[in-house]
Image (cartoon, rainbow over all chains, first blue to last red; front, side):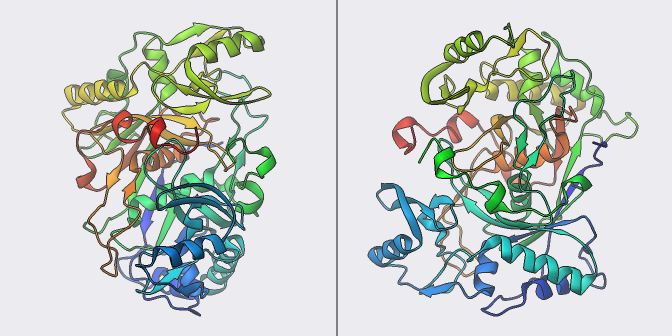
Length: 243
Length: 243
């Protein structure tokens, strides 16, 4: 693989209000079109990272819920889950119908209107493909798209951003058959580059800054290919040691 | 928090051979000194990410092991562990004495000489502090330092890079008391920025490219403070739902 010249992570500012029915690709294209001052133009080979929250809003995955009613919130979480893994106090770790294991089935109460919760997109890979196709139509550039969300982890404190959907850029990069610098075959060969890109994007988004889109520029051209979080990242229960 | 102008992730090339006793700070400083052509000079406010492998090598954490002897490798993993969480075939998930939960207790057989394994550093936070102090002495700049390693995760396929030690830059950023864009208090407030920075760095390192050091430039100034992976990221067993 050629020497990388570096990766640049750029926040996309000026993304306006997103409501059910908003055409996200068009909204993003408007913000990163070459004519927009003080903003990077989108280039072929960029990866566009879009947070789950605006994807869910655009897709109308909003439901009414009383933020102060713990019972109603729990019922919503259970409705969005196929399996409850653990409970402790207010914290419920569940498996969603997509196969994601996360807190509260990904039900999101922040950065949405009071009395409303945002559910995960129906099919985040499909959401990513639609944004990718829309950006190509609007701007004529081929980019990768990742839909990101914020998940906790077992064993480690703090949350990080991960990919819940992707299009046009690898979710897991398989280096099997590749050698290390000493010529020995690599052992840990499956790198989840989509999660790493989502984490890199979060560095410029920030939950308190409210930037829902970032551009990650400079990842190797070989990473661009048809891809899917569901097919590549979701670990089936029978392969999983912690469910 | 002020608007970010973007984060730049730069590979540091030209890091030479690391052997027990190598002064890593001096080696890195030599590679990123202002006089080195075609290489970025290190700036105050950068985060320097250093892979565990060269830290372990420099600290002499190398032990002889026959790479073809599964029994010997397993004995080494057990010796490095305080608790075995799961076993399946060759895969052993253990808790190290540092409190990390990972495959094979972090024992590393790739990119080391045949007949040798690299163990985790004794105290990766201390390793990070030493590199940070050495870079300040050599170059007069205050930087954050993260020692990174490659871990698998429950529920998700593929490995990502995470922080196992840090100095001068937050491990977990606590946004408690901060509001979202709509003025509601944030719920998921503890962001593991050190893991996100480690993941961003991996995008330019690559296991097949053999680049052991990267610079992450442009993270918010507020993130720079005394910090520790052990104190901030390691989740104590009694707080953990998956052990």
